[in-house]
Length: 238
Image (cartoon, rainbow, N blue to C red):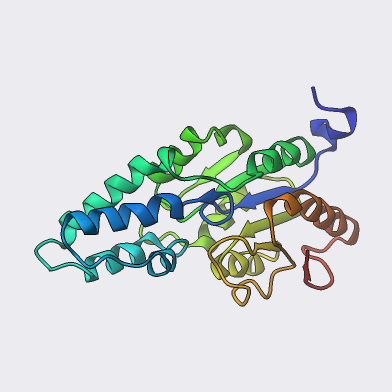
C-alpha cells in the first residue's frame, strides 16, 4: 500500500518516457537481427555503429537504410526478415536498461501519471511492454500509428489526455527535447542512450545512468510546481 504522502490525492506531475534508448536496450535485438539476416543472405554485414545510428529516429529511416543496402529484387524480402528476427529477439536478447524497473517502481506512486510516447510501431512497443512486464506502469501508451505521426503531435495528444501538471519528457534524442520545448514542458535527456550529448544540450537536465532519474525528475517537478514554470532555471547534468 502506498504511504499517505504518496496517495493519489497528493500526487503531482506527468512524466512522459521515450522507449528505445531511454527505457529499453533495443540494440540488443536490432543489431543481431540485421547482422544475422544479412549474413544469411550473403550481403555485406553492417557494423554495430552503423545500425545503432538508426535506432531512435523514425522507423521509416531505418527501413530505407536497410533497403538501400540490398539488391533491389531482395530489398523488401530482407527488410521483412530483419523485422521478423528483431521481433523474435525483443524478448530473448534485448532488455531494459539496468535499474529501469526500480526507477518506474519508485516513480509510479510519487507522480500523478506516467506515459510512454515512442516512434516504435504498436506491434514492436507492445511486445516490449508485454515481454518485459512494464505496461502497468503507464496511464497511456502512444506509439507511431501513421506515417504522419510526429513526436510533437504525439506528445501533444498525451498532454491533452492526461491532466497532471507540471510535465516532463524523458528521452535520448533531439526530437524528444525539441517536442518538449515546443509544448513548453521540461525535458530530461538520458546520456546512456543512443543520442549524443550535443543532441541533448538544450534539455533542462541530463542524467548519465537510470539510477539518477528518480531524484532528478522529482526535483524538477517540485521546482516547476513551486515556480509555476515548465522547466528549471538552467540546464544541469548529474
